[in-house]
Length: 468
Image (cartoon, rainbow, N blue to C red; front, side):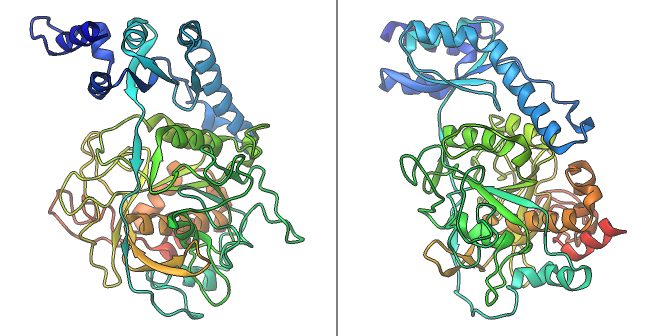
């Protein structure tokens, strides 16, 4: 194996050829680094073939559109992964296939990885990684009461409730996060798994691919608190605590983050489940049960990582609004993380109660064509929401800003059903109604810059325009 590693390293570093040798150029450098110190590496074998999803928006029926996307993705994976899977089986190696990204997860030694890289259908061999949740900052607890939280008032969501009679009814939101305490007083009645008699059915409403909440994982849990907090900002309310933007929307959840980090395995599995939720044992997928909106607070520090782009593209093709936090690596420019950096993602920065941008809020431009990021900014400092101990906690981060935007999309789609699933039509409404906030530090204009994006979120103006 040592000779093989030296050979691969030479192929990568040699300046003689005009282009890298085919095998070595397909293997990520961190895979080679891992093999220097370990006998094997856990890797994704990524196939070149990609499904054509361009016809999905023309499918008007919600369930049919969902199956169109899922079936195209699965068919492409099945048609192109056979050789890789057979090779791994012949060597007695396990292979975990994915279809939302056309890839196979395996643990292999250097010799096998070299053989895999030589296959013409293989595009890249990437190390399996763990993505950290952006660090959150504890804030002041605040005073509970009947008044909505400051972020709700700031974006004028409470005025939407009063003037339009819209609180998100008919919309299902999801998060890929650390889980949710589903029995929390501010969240239990909004959980789609709660039946009219007060009992629960978690099938199609909960997914825990790493089985952190049990083996098998039979009911939602949250061993961190983060996911309970973000869900509360989207839909939470218990009468005395008005913490959610769209408190009549329903929620489901996938535990893509095992604790304070999220494995690639769990994120891809959760991404597939969002497209076609299953029973809690992973069986009997139903694309018609997918959510309308999915909120995400996870991301890589490096905004140029395109590994998850196929996931976001599939959600969009399926009519699911892909909401992401921009990251907490500010105030430097170019600090936006992926997937928030993708053109297909709608990313949020964070500001405080005085409408001052948070110093931690990641800035653009994006590595993808130097596009402006974030897309918009929302309340993200000292945001009080539900916590996994049954109580409430105020914390800060772009993770707290993103669910304000996701909840606003729920209000828009509830108030204007003609826009439902129309992501291309919804984004301009959010953009054009945002309150312009100038900051040229990282480039851009008064109306659209790499600190604020299009500006401060205005839920009332967005719903008003959608209704107009």
